[in-house]
Amino acid sequence: MSLEQGLEEIGHKILVLTRNELYMKMRFMDVALSAFYYVQDFSVDLLATDGETMYFNGQMLGGEYRQNRIGVNRAYLHLVLHCIFRHVFRRNGREELMWNLAADIAVESVIDDWNLQNIRKSQSWIRQRTYRDLKEEIKVFIAEKIYGVLVRWKLSDRELERMAREFTVDDHKYWAKDEDDEKQSEMNQRWQDISEKMQTDMETFSKEAASNTGHFLDQVRVENRQRYDYRSFLRKFAVLKEEVTVDDDSFDYVFYSYGLRLYGNMPLIEPQEWKEVKKVEDFAIVIDTSMSCSGDLVKKFLEETYGILSEAESFFQRVNIHIIQCDDQVQSDRKITCKEELQEYMEKLDLAGEGGTDFRPAFAYIDDLIATHRFTELKGVIYFTDGQGIYPQKMPLYQTAFVFMDDGAEEQKVPPWAMKLVLDEEDLRGVRNR
Image (cartoon, rainbow, N blue to C red; front, side, top):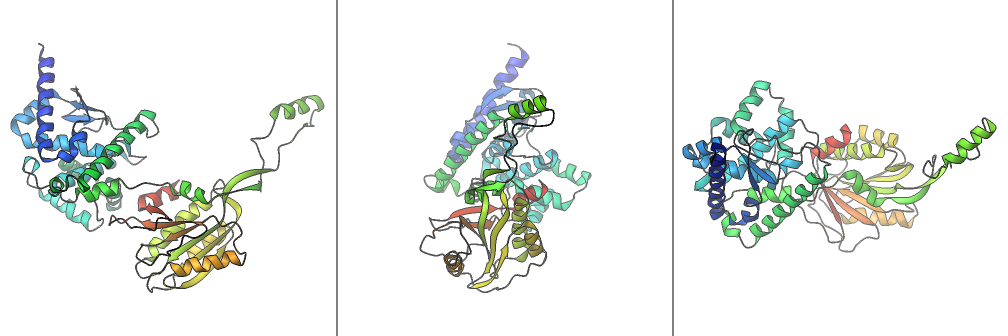
C-alpha cells in the first residue's frame, strides 16, 4: 500500500468515526451527516465540499485528529451546516471573500451556541465581540444578513483578514460559481429537502435532542422560508390586454425583405403596432401606518415597487394604482397613473395615522372603489404591514398578499385565503441595483 493510499484509508476512517460521534448527539441530522462521498484531495487545507462530495486532505486530517479531536468534529459539522443553509449555492453575485466570511460566521455561531461536549470550545475575544456587535444589528445570524452588516461596517483589509483567520474552518474552493448551473440547482434542491425534513424532525420527534442546540431551529426556520422574487410575485396580478408597441414576434421578415428587394424601398408587410401582453394595470397597495411600521421600511418597499414599475415588461405604460394608508381606519388614498407620479409620491411621503392596526377598513374601502368603477380589472392587493392586526374573516374577490419586512423574528401567520411575501433588505437592494 502506498503512502497516499494509507492516508486515504486513515482519512476515510476518521471521517466515519467523526460522523458517528456527531450522530450520537444529533440524531435529527442523520441524513445530513451521511450525505457525502469521501474523496482525498491534497489541494484542500483540511475539508471542502461542493454539496455532494466531502474532500479531505489525509495528511492534515490525521494530524488534526491526533491533536484536536473536537476541532475535527467542529470542522465536519461546520461543513454540513454550510450545506443545510445552502451557503454553497447562494452567493448570487456577492463579493466572494465577504460572502465566505459571512457564511463562516453564521455556522460557527450555531456551533458555539450548542451545549454539546463533543464540539465545545472556549470563545476568543474576537469571536465574542463579533457576536455581540452583530446582535445589535440583526436578530438571527443568517449569512445574507451578516453579509449586509459586514458591508455596512466597511472593515479594513486587516480587520477582514483577522476575522477570516478566526472563523475560517473549511476550504470553499468547490462552492458554486454559477448559480444557474443545472447540477448546482439540483444539489441546492436536495439540500433544501434535507433541511426541511430535519426541521420537521426537530419540531416533532427529536424535540428533546434539539433542546441542546440553542437557536438552531429558529435559524433553520428562517433559512427554509419560501423565498420570492418580488417581480415574479407582482406578475400574479397581471392581466392580458393589447398595448401599442411593435410586435416583433408576429413579424414576418421574409415578406419584408422580399418587398425591399423587389421594389427597392417598399416592404410588402410591416410589423403590427400593437400586441397582446400580460402586465399589471389595476393594482392596490395598502400601507400599514400604525406605530409598529416605520417610515423607512415603507419607503424601501415603495422604492422596490418603483424599480419594478420602471420596467416596461412588468407594467403597462398607463396604470391605475391606488396607494392607501390605513391604521385602524383609512387615512389617505393617492391614485398613481405612471412611474413619475410614484416618484413624486415617494419624495413627499408623509405617513398619516399611528393608531392601532385593523386591516378590515382598507378592504371595505377597496370594495367601494370596485363598486364605484374606480377599479375595473383589479387582480390584486398588496398590504405592507408587520402583521399585528385584525384580519377580515371573509375572503375578498381579488387576490391579496401581505408583505412583511424580514427582521428575523417569528414568522407571521396570515389567513388561509391570503398570500404571504417576506422581503429583506438584500431583496430591496437587489431590485434597486439591477
